[in-house]
Length: 198
Image (cartoon, rainbow, N blue to C red; front, side, top):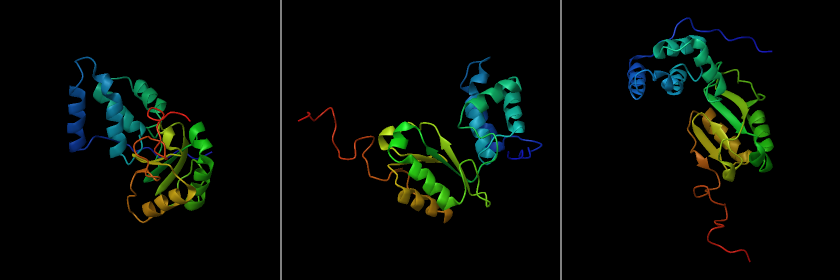
């Protein structure tokens, strides 16, 4: 069992994020400010280095005049929120059926070997955290990996290795399909709407 990470004693939005938060809250009618909880939690997570501390959630709860437990429920329900610190690059390998059928197990294995960590671990330098995740919604371009806000699709073990190498060098690899798929179409270019079966 991993030991609990220390919680920061305080949290407050910086000036820029406070202005953003106020603009977000203003989009909702009076008495419905709680509807802004997801975007405010996202803002807090981004300011905090890609994770949500209890102090950040308490701050959002106070700002929205919500019981803290309701904010905790939202944050713990959505997998987009990290309840403990993660690496600078959060690598999430989709292992749901379509990705698994197209080789996600090989992608996960390549990530483990390249990073020297297992699923659920972070590299000692804090640069990478590796996770399995449920469907990323890009099944036609399986296998798929999400790294921070970017999707990498139509992957091979070699392809994910190249992406991780670029990230290690501090470069930002081009997101999207590694097979140059056009939108979400089949790799051979065929479509079921335009071509008849022979």
